[in-house]
Amino acid sequence: MLRSDMPTSTDTDELVLPTVRGGAEWRSELYRVACSQFHRAADVLSLHPEVRVRLLEPRRAYTVNFPVRLDDGLVANVTGYRVQHTLTMGPTKGGIRYAPDVSLGQCAALAMWMTWKCALLGLPYGGAKGGVRCDPRSLSACEIERITRRYAAELIPVIGSDRDIAAPDLGTGEREMAWFVDTYSQQVGHSVPAIVTGKPTFLGGVEARRTATGLGVVYVTEAVLERLGMEVDDLAVVVQGFGDVGGVVAEELQQRGARIVAVADISDGLHDPAGLDIAALKDWQQSTGRLAGFPRADALKPVEILELPCDVLIPAAVERQITAQNAGRLSCRVVIEAANGPTTPEADEILGERGIHVVPDILSNAGGVTVSYFEWVQDHQRLPWNPKEMSDRLRELLNEAWSRVVDASGRYSVDLRTAALAVSLERVAQAAQGRGIYP
Image (cartoon, rainbow, N blue to C red; front, side, top):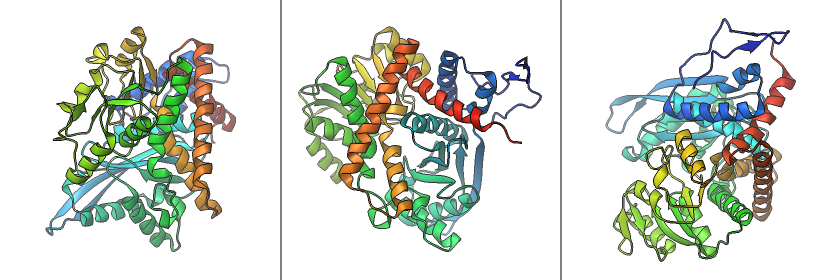
């Protein structure tokens, strides 16, 4: 699906093959998925080949290798990445994840999706993503701190509060962002809280950021249900993932009257058709560190809960959970993507043929980057925002984005994902064409 060798245009609009072709450094299964989605939306827009070439591949891909001394005195070599997808829209923005499978291709795909997400919400950012290949569960707090500080120092040539702003992601949180702020600030000689978002409130973070992604998923779910004529009350919901996003989604929807019939984390899936007690589940998870062993539910494999009968399925875990292998067995009316890239293009086709609506990740989970934008603005202005103002503004922006997606879906006669990407692509393409090519 990689089309770095696509034809470009000349002044006479004649198509010729380029003499210079982009690299394949970021080719991966996840990047294939992102490219497949891109080309489908670009075809709907009849996007010019020149613009496709400019928007498909990342503008910068930065790889770092650095030594870290472990607690036992041994030295390990650690690899980290930072990918900036487009520099056209403003500074780049994106999370930092710590996980054993972090790769350049994974970061490239996630950076591309972040570009479309920001464009869909009208945020003045290009997309970025970074990460360190490690297993944070096997590392001590001191080892994670040394990795974070060295990684931050290695990125200084390509980051800045008006160049590239980081945020938490899988395996990172407020603690790591605090270390990131301190390391960068020590290097430049003054405090720069706006270098990251998602940091502790006492360092300029905002309380709303902790629940923003999950709350955004709930706001989008409410808007989708209203459009479909469905009620939240007694809605049967399955949530795969029970962390910072899935846990918030399950709790908030239950408070609104929904029945959360199944949840899962990496350890186990839990099912109760009458509805799980989410508060009790959170207490259990906090005391044991996992969902496995909870006594008041039936245990299933985490992936098996995707096929349970429900009204709304919310994958809030990791990528590529809904594939061609299981899409035909899903038993839901709507999929709300709270994770990044949980559905493959092949699964999209199957679900579309079955009449199952898929609300794409670039809309559903955009609450996190939206509130991150609010935090970034607050840091620059040195003027705190009211939490209610943030929540109201978040709902407003998500509802506006949903309306744009519904409109584009009808106008182009396409599914919701392609419609969302078309809206985003159109905005970024106009900016790219307007700025031209330097030199």
